[in-house]
Length: 167
Image 1 (cartoon, rainbow, N blue to C red):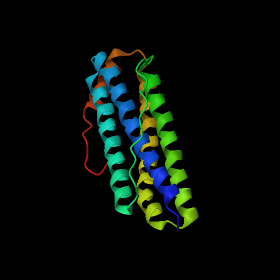
Image 2: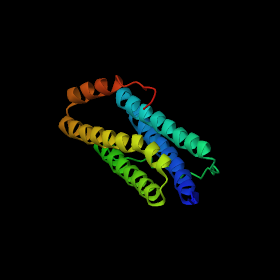
Image 3: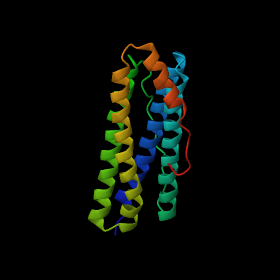
Image 4: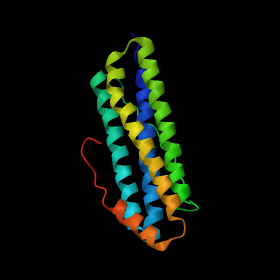
């Protein structure tokens, strides 16, 4: 079994997870600038979660005996138009991550790399949750519109999020 393709895909996924962390941190900064610390907290936790995902891929690649080659990460956007656009961008990004993970699963299955396919099952399930959450938050932010009271409550709701080990 030639795992070089898998090693390359896993290295690429590490970079994608690191980019996601930077993207969510940039989104967090946008909300902090507007004193919406609860929503900023949500995206900051999301950023930390993505770094943990990158580390899971890093550790797994190391356990496989693959060569870890860290790739450069492009600068994320920072000039968002509004809160709804940010949540929509987050969902769009999660869909890209889902497709990337599916591509690695497909490649692993094609070469009979069952350990990688098994490892990735957690990420497949995680992406279902990530996309569902992003969709729900888009629905909520659309309900908020320009209602300051609703925005305050939404901000307070997202302030409750904490980083859970194993996410």
